[in-house]
Length: 109
Image (cartoon, rainbow, N blue to C red):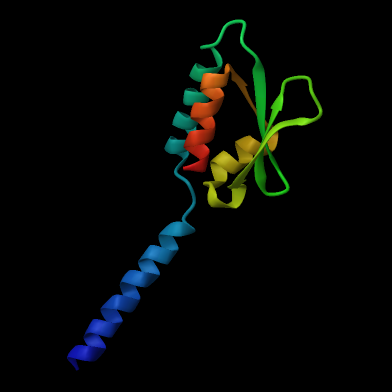
């Protein structure tokens, strides 16, 4: 009997952990992410502008106005919350290399 109760507990914990991976992102988190990106856009005056996009399931960086990718990451968009993935589908403008690196670190960590 103790084995059955223990096994049931382990299965319930595993189900909760798996379901948390597929839970939709909280809209409050998405709003705060937007304000973070807006703030980072105003940091670098005179620095290069970048566009971060989702392409073929990965995060890709372009220099503004160029068609050739500046940087292709190995970060999968499918690993991100739905709200972040939607922003990347539209493209996120970033000013300055430091802001770009910080943003990529946020997405890829």
